[in-house]
Image (cartoon, rainbow, N blue to C red; front, side, top):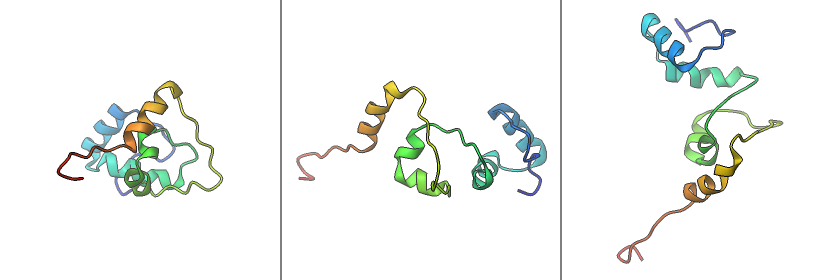
Amino acid sequence: TSGGPDANKLLDIEELKALGKSSCFCPFFHSRDATEDADLILMPYNYLLDATVRNSLKICWNNSIVLFDEGHNFESMASSSSSFELNSFEI
């Protein structure tokens, strides 16, 4: 991204925010664009479970290895991400 940080330097969220502010670029869009060439991507697993978010990331998942940290929360997150409520009017 034009005006963005050095692609080889790993920044935490606060550093990325500060650099974005001082260099006039959007940290969110810069990070999202950087995933296209990344070898390692760290993200909350709800990003993978939500199809809309997952598809917006433009990540090629072929031959990928996915690791879930804090797997004890995975079941409830998967359940809530694929659940919905209907009221009597909607039925």
